[in-house]
Structure formats: structure tokens, C-alpha cells
Image (tube, rainbow, N blue to C red; front, side, top):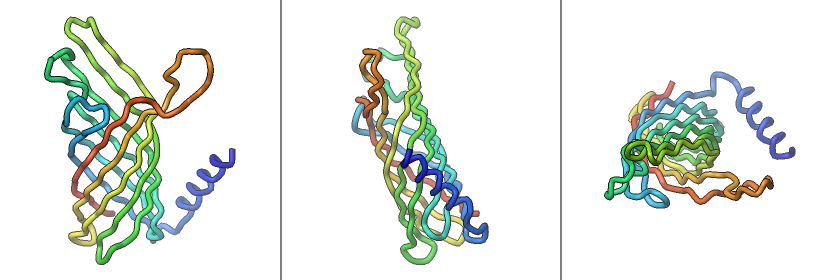
Length: 185
């Protein structure tokens, strides 16, 4: 209950700050998923929408889609993908000019889908996941910058079917590295 109250208080503090000090950052991005439970390095694309205060605290919505995420060289899966939709707290600080570094952490949906040959093997699963990472936005002007980001993702759930409520970090994890153009409004 205390954690929930702190999250609500933090959200109200961010929302209640003056509009003149707020920035909105829209970033379409592309990159790779690697390590952890990825069979091999795969492409990923998506975007993020961040609402930050000049004080360095903000909130971000991040969407990612990785086609062929579960594909292996042996060709068992005919179609597979991983989709993420995360809500994150964002903490940033200026490093000179229009550039900034940031850290981010949060949670949301991890949706995995795998279809096998002749529909013999199909998996369509929604998990709660968490992510944490950071990056840099190198400001080219007041409104445009180049963004680089690296994050760690992990699912959370109950892997044991024992009718007990015991949520813990799951066994599915991976890293994501991305780059994109950041538009500041």
C-alpha cells in the first residue's frame, strides 16, 4: 500500500508541475533484441512517447515489436513475434546544451506469439513484464535529437501451477538496444 501511495504521489507531482516546464519527447526507433532467451539477434522497431519536467522526472510509454523473435535456424516456428507495451518512470539530467542522459524503469505487457507448421504448435501468451535501462539524447537543436537506448526486459509471473499466489521474476529475459530520432515539443 505504501508503494502504491508513493507512485500516486509521484504521478500527481509530475502532473501538477507547471506546463511551461514540461516537455514531450516523441521517438520512433529501430534496433535489435539480443542475449538472454533470444535464439539469435533479431530486429525490433517501435516508438516511445515521454512526458518530462525540466526537474528531470517524467513518464514514458514505450511500444516495441520484434517479428521472428522466436525463430531458430531449424525452422520449427513458421511465424513468431514479441510485442511490448511498457509504462516507465524516467529520470534525466542535462549534460550540456540540448543533450541529456536518462534512466528508465517500469512495467507493462509482454505479448508473445508463436505459430508452428500446420497449427500443430501454437502459443499466444500475455505476460506482465518489467524493464530497466538508460540512454542518451544528443540534441541537434532545441527540437530534434538523436537517441540511443539500452534496456533489460524480464517477465513476471507464477510459473508453478499449484493454486498458490506466488509471483516472482519469470524465466524469460532479453536485452534491447535501439536508436532513433527524438522530437521535442
